[in-house]
Amino acid sequence: MANLCPGLLWAFIWFLILIFLAWPIAFLIAWLYVLLLPFSVCISALQSVCESILGILKLCVTCTENMMGMKPLFG
Image (cartoon, rainbow, N blue to C red):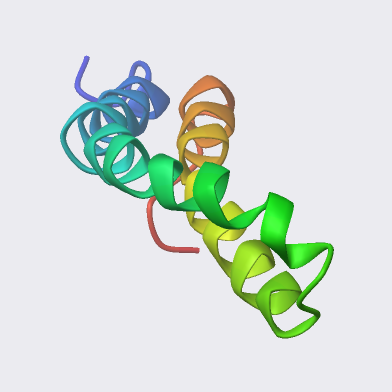
């Protein structure tokens, strides 16, 4: 019975990562992205910074996709 659906455990772990890690980080970093994005048009050095911040913000999407796919945390 323990091996009935091991993907549910991974989905639950991804859910916890989403709630306790990805969302708080995204909420803290999003204001910086919104602030810097208009200036990145004028200052080309900020474009790479904004791309890096956007990658961090996409952590929520990554966690949700892995949760829905019931993917293992490592592998």
